[in-house]
Image (cartoon, rainbow, N blue to C red; front, top):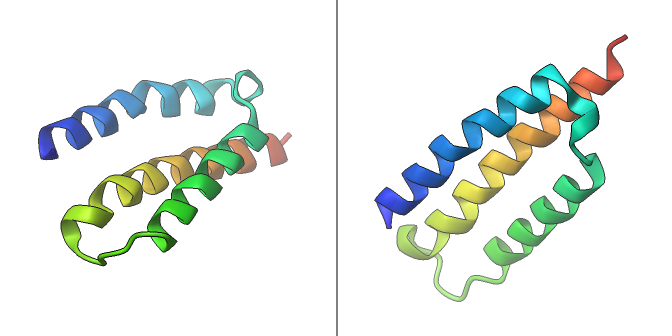
Length: 77
């Protein structure tokens, strides 16, 4: 599971760079919806332990990073 999450996180780096360079290519609303789904997955977890929370928490961190980049880059002229 750690290898899968590491691969997903590393694979997110080009998307973050692309969003930083050209934020118009990403849809902010879509990322907010996906982050909301990850938040729901975390809140709906039956057992609060590292194993059950690791995947949705990792996804949420990546999504919040993307939202932050898109919000900050679109707000600046």
